[in-house]
Image 1 (tube, rainbow, N blue to C red):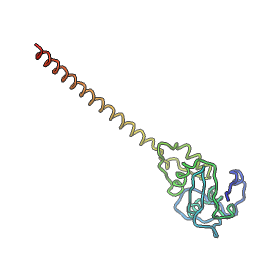
Image 2 (tube, rainbow, N blue to C red):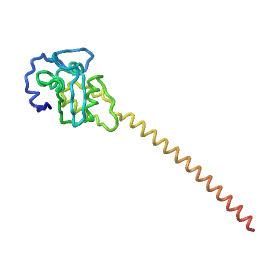
Image 3 (cartoon, rainbow, N blue to C red):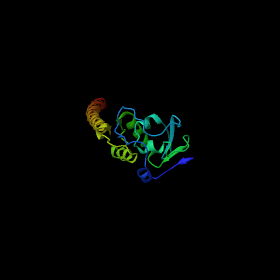
Image 4 (cartoon, one colour):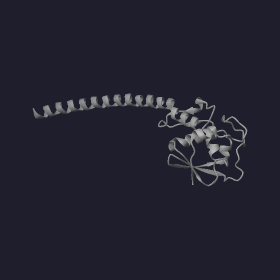
Length: 178
């Protein structure tokens, strides 16, 4: 059974649990009802399958992910929860929830991850805690330009040596022919 609900219905739903900030902390908070639930829940995000520990979701009770995996929303704890979002970026959202920071590869824009975190209801996201690799990318670009410059120097030196060798061979050839 696949569970799907609109994002608006999550916002409008009255949650019986007390409100707790979803700011990333190491403090354990248990507000949603997970008593008869399995230890993990299954998400299908954009076609990619994820198994997520409920203990992680308990740490962030005001997120959409915690709500849709709670007993209030998920009647069958073994059912897969479908979310129509980018499945490749979801892993970085989970990393952010686990660690409070994430290092993105150059292929994942920081802005897209911030939009996903907002969609999932993660509040108080500290943008500085998301490393988008731009500094690493600039360093790599600088390093590549240095390598290119050094390669140009080596090629120029080799061309000069080839030209000198060619001149010597031509001179030798002319002397021999005389």
